[in-house]
Image 1 (cartoon, rainbow, N blue to C red):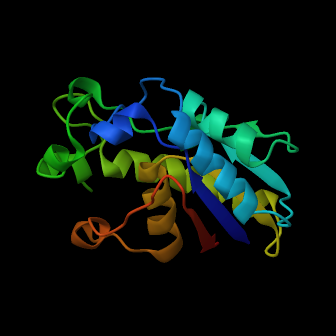
Image 2: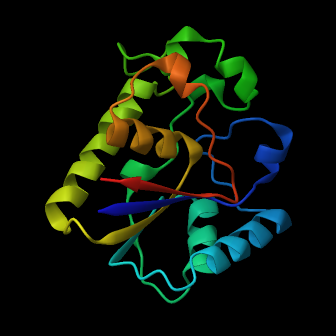
Length: 178
């Protein structure tokens, strides 16, 4: 199957370069324009299902990208919990070796590590594989972290140095074979 993964539209936190995690934040004016552009990019694509993170920024984006679809809200594709690391610059978090740990689920600050996020996204993707056919197209409106986890599950890439190069922009659609 093909998974069309859309990162939510831009937020004020994105502009500032800080991570907001599960803090609920809507998209800004530019984020609305980005979602409208994605709507145009996906024109003519027929999805058998649409899944959306419960975060306001993802829901708002989905309502603009595919207003004609009823969507499924799934917490497994929500942004990662940041614990005490909320509000840090993303560039600082990449310096924290536990942030992307493949050994522990939480950092001492209570942040969800890559391992924990990977496991919940892998569970979500496993359910999709059982529920849908191989030629189905599914839209997922989510967050950069979840997109990286989807990419990792789909490709089997678990090298954190390679992961540092993975970027999912707010106005971008990534398509993964699953």
